[in-house]
Length: 110
Length: 140
Image: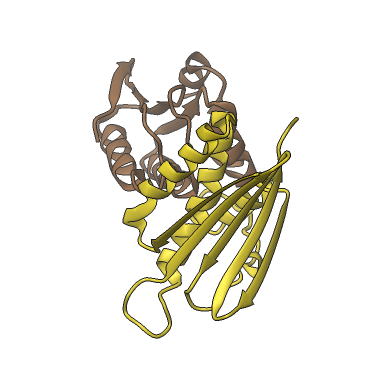
């Protein structure tokens, strides 16, 4: 999966622009894992352009958050659209994955 | 009153078709795009459940799923019927939404999402089919 990404002082910022559903979740997870591995300090997912995350998509976020924790790297998701944020909240994932309103807060927190 | 119906095999490769069906119904009835996303979330969860666990009991082919959307006044009804093994998605145990990063089961909260997005849900088993009837009240 192609994903726009950039480096911010050792933190990779990934900017997906597609739906993260049952069909795309695995490729999405693998793309994030790759970016996490090559990053020096951690990964931030800028979710501004993502309008849809299903429970299969949430699973991808969970697995990447675990991988980051195991590797001792930071992980955060920022700028979530309202409906997507609600999915993280209903599932309780907002308690175990750092969500921030904007990119700067996410970068500052890592 | 507007009614639309889609029958398809419970194969996850058919999800795109399901999503297009929902998009079309929402657009045809002048409803907001956010409703389409909400319905896709609900039906993806339920459809993938049937596709993963609900193989037709007497055959090696996938179960068949029938989805009917009905809009009357400001109430949307979603009726989901499948020919899979008996399964009441509403009886599934509630996931632990308090578990920590590593203790958490990666699945099981799909039904919690369904409950959030719909106002009422009712399951019944009849004529060797699972039937789930859901309602959502739309804002006037």
